[in-house]
Image 1 (cartoon, rainbow, N blue to C red):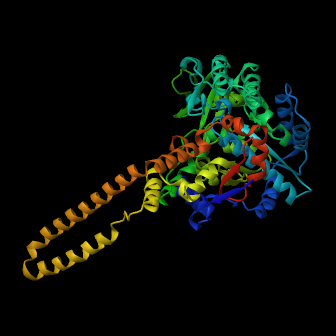
Image 2 (image 1 turned 120 degrees about the vertical axis):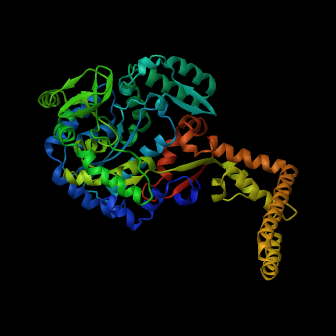
Image 3 (image 1 turned 135 degrees about the horizontal axis):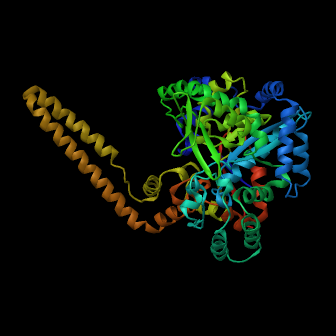
Length: 538
């Protein structure tokens, strides 16, 4: 099963912040604690063991057992949950929204990275245990970001009335209306074993569960249960009780804002930009279908766009009695995660790591160990037939990642039987005009401007001729151009990375139940390169 790789920088799809992090640039080191080398996990384990109590472990295990009460856990998942009671058990975590039918393909890559890192750590530290965690973003409310998936270039969208979605936490949404998506999806994928497997998976997840949280838990569990993946819904009263001291610090001291604003400014000064601007209070109020941000003004608190208000004393009482009503936003969710899990590492995409870089000072201020940050695996999957086409077209791995017009222009120039490069002529023209400049300076310096204008005009003329010749050759070589464009469009749908557009079902139709084992075997989370995977057909 051949695999190749490129550096993330070579793909041109990743930010300077992420590529500089992977290169361990000196200027970024103040924004994280430990780089994700395998040798750095042992001190991280010691840091976490010092602060994560047996009481916290008991609360976590009880919450997980309750959440898995309706699922057949399987031996691997059951053993992992029970192991969390031991002080020598740690977690590695990824998080993701509750995207319909997993959303983009990289959902799988996130979890595969997490599973494989847990496995690698177990080999390195056999006396300890490492549990892969998928943190479901059940408290998010961005319905428009999660209500669809793409298959075969078509968008399959869950249509419910906006008022039904509203500002609700998406995990609480009823699965009404998904039968229509199921019918369209079933018609699209047709018959055959792989198609029938997918239909059954969709039906069992979404038509047999009442809300999006339960449906997503079932789906992820079915895909990854044999690898011991533990799925956590942190929207839980007992887990939120563990977070009460930090909720209070956020409300009454604005701890996230005061500790991250300077960090964000420093990242911006270094030219990296700011991923998330912190609010003064980074908590939502979550109750009876409402999820709105909390605002403080002159010592009193209110919920944005509502009549809900508290004095400071009333707010303290509300937090103590109903901590589950306080929902961390993107700036505070990482802290909540690290408070309730014996976690060593967070695995996420580039955008996620970018906001984690803003948080280190907040963690230090609150004496919570800052986790190791690991970029999830990324990959391009091609069939063996596509790989053969690439070779016949003489396209290198790195050339695949060029913009399409750049790729086509490069290949046309290469395969053309005439030279479509006017660089020598342009250089010759520049030399000729240099002599004219010297002559103008000696005779009439006011003539220099006219010489410059003529030089620009003639260079522009050569560029136009070169482009016309290139376009003529493209027409002459239209079959080759068409094949190049077709191959790249297959591998980069919508001119984006495959993993950001394509749903896993498209790959499952091709490779069947071997898809996830192939990813497990081929993706190494500590390799820190972009993988190109060539899989044979089913």
